[in-house]
Image (cartoon, rainbow, N blue to C red):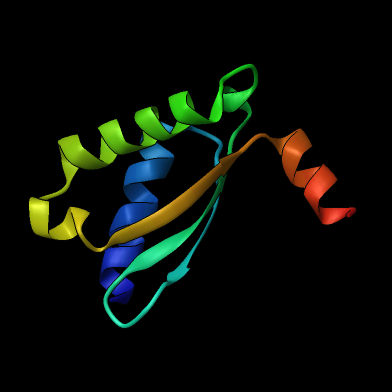
Length: 85
């Protein structure tokens, strides 16, 4: 599973340059986490998720796609606010 986490991490960094990722196991066979990227500034959450899943769907096999659980998409400002609550 570590290989898949690394593959997903590499894929997302390549498509969202400068993003901060925290990916982890979300059950025995799934990966989830958090992506913080300044490119999300001004975007609605639905648009962020569409961009994320477009990359996942275009780059991973259907079987690999099923291994991706929720990946929360946040801006650096949103992340800073969440850490201070």
